Length: 222
Ligand SMILES: C[S@@+](CC[C@H](N)C(=O)[O-])C[C@H]1O[C@@H](n2cnc3c(N)ncnc32)[C@H](O)[C@@H]1O
Image (cartoon, rainbow, N blue to C red; front, side, top):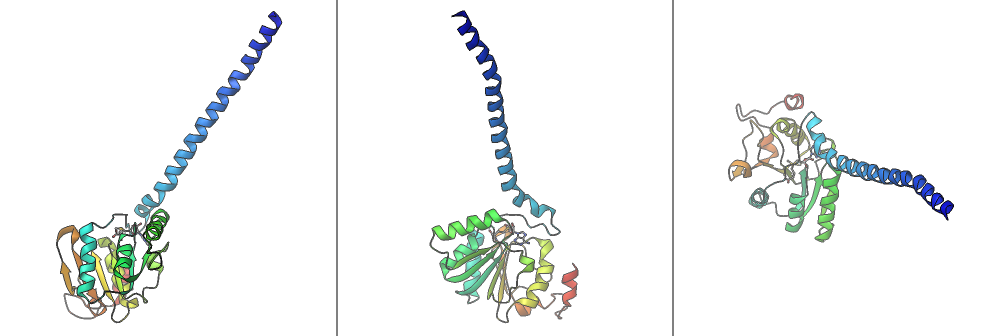
């Protein structure tokens, strides 16, 4: 009887540390998975800060989105091809698809691309709302009749050069929050953060100061 008790106690002494070890490994595993998950989710949102042109994720306000479509309608663009450069969570592309456009969003952040695709699918708009994980500087914009951009001031001169070369003859550009510097817009709507500006190809080739065609290398170098 005494022997049996001793054996049980001895076994307990042997198994307790290994249980503690297992518990520790589980905690380390869960912590690692949580930290790894957070890192994977957060990285694409932080990466833009390390790019030459930092274009962070800031979604358009509801009023801004309304202004974009008010402007497109006033420019006679009620359907056709549309692109949002840096499409974020897809709100402009999805609204465009609802209005009848064949809309494309180019976005670098994979989470935002997947979120946008899911939203479009859930709303039954996936045939008219297309999202691609692409760098906006590396895509050809010539097939789009309407281009929307909610950018940052530092990217606008370079983007002007790209659009001037690639925009189709009757293409229009809507800039949100930040206009193209030194370019006379066709029109603007609203004020402050919700301002949107309308440009056509001809306008993008002219400088406000001297009304002359500008050399495209000027923007490329900036
Ligand atoms: C200011 S947010 C605009 C979001 C959206 N267009 C809207 O109005 O709600 C800019 C977006 O551009 C994306 N972005 C930044 N650099 C990019 C690049 N080189 N190519 C494509 N997307 C980019 C960012 O991840 C971010 O989601």
